[in-house]
Length: 84
Image 1 (spheres, rainbow, N blue to C red):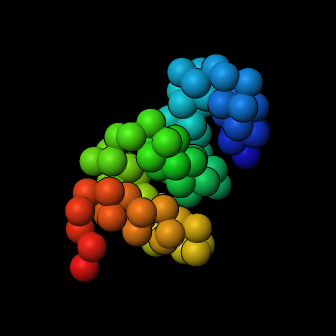
Image 2: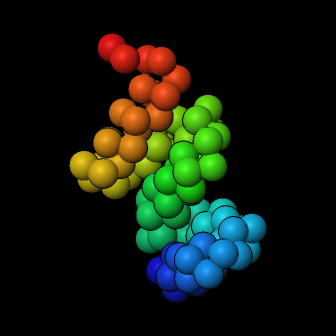
């Protein structure tokens, strides 16, 4: 979970690339993986990478079924024009 905290700190301080790399590295840790995938999805959503975010969030939901992840996925689908 330290990697998640470091990633969040890097992202907040504007060190986007470093924060994203921390998240990618955290995926290899089973305890941190769901959080890392979810956070990657959010960051991709902020960056407008809708196609990438769909895969990340769809992967995160079974691992960490939180309402905010479902909401982010719904928003990404809306941005793609998939309103059903």
